[in-house]
Amino acid sequence: MKTVLITGGAGFIGSNYVRYALQTHDDWRVVVYDKLTYAGNLDNLRDVAEAYKDRYIFVRGDIADREAVVGAVRAHDVGTIINFAADTHVDRSLMEPGSFIMTDVYGTYVLLEVARELKLERYHQVSTDEVYGQVLTGRSTEEDKLHTRSPYSASKAGGDLMCMAYYTSFGVPVTITRGSNNIGPYQYPEKAVPLFVTNAIDDIPLPLYGDGRQQRDYQFVLDHCEGIDVVVEKGQLGEVYNVGSGTETANIDMTHAILDLLGKPYSLIQPVTDRPGHDRRYALDTSKVRQLGWSNRHSFEQAIEQTVRWYVDNAWWWRKLKTGEYLAYYKRQYAGREVKE
Image 1: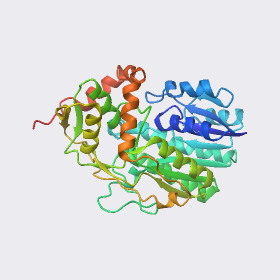
Image 2: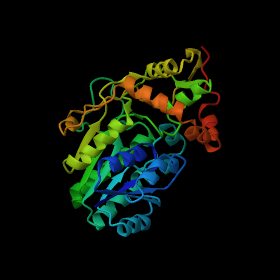
Image 3: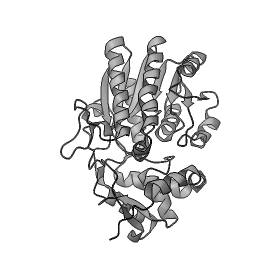
Image 4: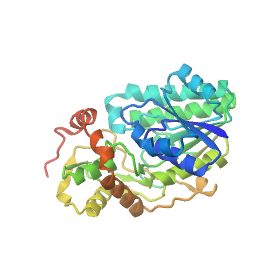
């Protein structure tokens, strides 16, 4: 039995990967290590905890706490770390950059130190296309220089660079994936797609930044999970792999698609002043990961339809999240930014 420590496994992408890994790898035992910040939620793993009691363990902890990480790795005889743990929301990084640096840079350093000290067989870093910065033409390849434009993307780039340094300097067996924007079940409703879906369900205005012409590759989260898994299993050590659908969609078109699926009027769209340094376009060249045998299974239309349907069917999950801390953040972020047309 192979024991894999999945940090950030109670978050959006992490919990989807935990579920995928347990379903796919009968010989894996999964230890989820998560701090349970506002975006970490054991409800994301409720079904997993029931279905895989013999192969699933949860440990609450901070990746920036070296003693706790070492304790979890030793206690459960972990051989591989897959790091999903990160502060990820660009808007929040503009408000509170320090927590992003602590988790995304220092936390990655701690995990790499543990992998080095305990001679783990594999360390995989889950990163983002945002480290390349905006790409107005063409597509980002894994060899492109990093050009970050927000505290979030800078913190993720710092973690990536630390990974490569530990591979080169100490021989830590590292791989990295850089994924495009994910959509799907269990995404905390501060992010654009679940925010817009849940607002629209309740006939609350959808705060759309600027002209809405920013372009993103919205990939279905399970496609991303499969891509990560292929790299963990087959990727070459010391290499980076981009994972995305290869199709970009303007945010205004994404918004229209959500409203159309819910049968809601476009008048719910509320333009708001754009955020500082908002990247106009991300686009990934994914030919490298496709050479490992991966391909996305969902088009944008399929991904957004399945995502909308999940939030419609699972109000029990998101309604209780859109209270308290979330409402305080929402008001702080969007109050007074409405643009009069």
